[in-house]
Image 1: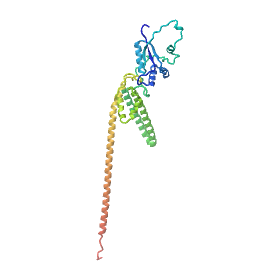
Image 2: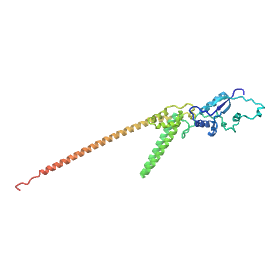
Image 3: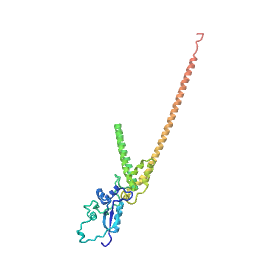
Length: 321
């Protein structure tokens, strides 16, 4: 060889904050291999993932491997000098480990490290793996909300028709379908929120902060405001760029949020005013009934007095008669 050559060496070490399972999945996706083959690389013994590289090519491969979460390094290839005497000697143990990949359990996968490197992650909604950006997160929340409202409207309309025949059956079916729609909405929203947390480089278990009082009202705002990691992190490559439809849906959702808040606020104030008016009316009616009863008792008492007076004033028989 006329120039210096290099190799990529890996000993099973991971970058800080990276879980072993995440790194193995990323490596399996990068190598286009299965996880069982990747498991053989995590033995603690040095493994040459790629050989006979120029320094620039070695840097490119190292950057790709670093994005998966593993801690690899570049080493110079040792020049090999062959002689007739060495060809008759038995191969050493170290040579066997690296020159016989078919017999060694530590051999790297057959696919090249730098081949078909994914620039962006693949969008998968119904999974907790992967990443999703801010605008796509808002767009999906709008789609989920509209879908839930549409299904609810259809179920309500059908329920009215069934209620005309049997109100009991309509109530049971409406309750079951409503529970199913609610559970499906919560489940998909959890998956999308976990992917949004991954885009920020956070653990998906932080979703449970939504259940904490006061924190649960602020945490969703952070998910909508904070930008994700620009490059790859321990959860995979960055999500693809946003399409025009994603941008339009996200803007619509941002416009729909204050509208929904206004509707809830107006409905809440209307309910409070109606409740206050009903309380005032009930108080007025009770006071009127009390007044009427007292007045009625007074009228009855007056009639009794008049009757007593009339009895007392009955004429006496005259002496002439």
